[in-house]
Amino acid sequence: MNREKTIIRTSIIGIAANIFLSAFKAFVGIITNSIAIIMDSVNNLSDALSSVITIVGTKLAGKPADKKHPFGHGRAEYLTALVIAVIILYAGLTACIESVKKIINPVTPDYNTASIVIISVAVVVKIVLGLYVKASGKKVNSDSLIASGQDALMDSIISASTILAAAIFLIWHISLEAYLGVLISFAIVKAGIEVLRETISKILGERIDSHLSKEIKRTIVSCDKEILGAYDLVLNNYGPDMHVGSAHIEVPDTWSADKIDSMSRKIANEVYVKHGVAMSAIGIYSVNTKENSAAQIRERVSKIVMEHKEILQMHGFFVDEKTKQMRFDIIVSFDSLSMKEMFNHVVQDVKDAFPDYDVQVQFDVDISD
Image (cartoon, rainbow, N blue to C red; front, side, top):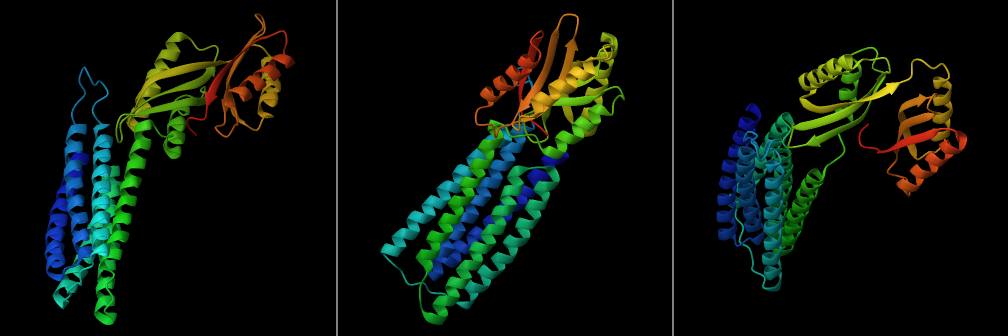
């Protein structure tokens, strides 16, 4: 709830500041006949609209889970970010069209001291607003606020460029208005494309943050000294700070079902308390503790597997010498030219070295650190 309040409060401040700046810039742009300042005003107005959509998205994302959406509505923030990206792109394209029209049919600007002072004040306001919004976004892990803050800082540079154009006109009587308007429009379009690309990437599903992944695995292993490793960590993202995960742990083959159940519950609780991640499943890899030769076989297999540079890890190894069965998982790097071919090649190498064994290998990819 505090996160939602912070986003909404920051967005409201952004709306008020951008409407104020847009109105003044539009007034100055009209009286000075400056297309660059008018385009800058439109940019501020689109920023205000983006903040409105951020509030709507935050409200939608904050709705509790229901039968139809058991994982909540957190991903609504990503959908609103897509809308914001489209608005930014539209503003940029509109600005470009209008600026090109002014290049074809130029109009001489009419600057005065008051207009330059107003734009200078706007630059300062945008810098302060950008730093505040960006800091708030980082504090509550809101991509929308971080993007808005960065956009505001970029806007301050754009506004500063209009002052430079005014100075050039006053000193040398050279009008760069329309050309500057084109450059501003390109900057706006670029910002829209970046927001669009980042949002789509999150919707598609990104790699788990390396630090978070390592911390969760460290927490899992610390739950019991007999847990030999944590692997295959998967986090499904259902919105900012909303993750549902699963993992495998290596434990001695002597553990009872009761102990496994108890430990799985302990791990789920510890991970949720420390990292806010709900663990939906804890899988088990059994590790040999009875056969003395199992360790030697594992070492031989590991050497064969890890000789291939495109194999990042082998885990979950278990061998049953009575039934002549061997099983383990290997992680194949995304850098492999053909991940499936590399996997099959490694499996065949192991089978060739142990022809009497039923070799069962699980194909894993490099999901998390």
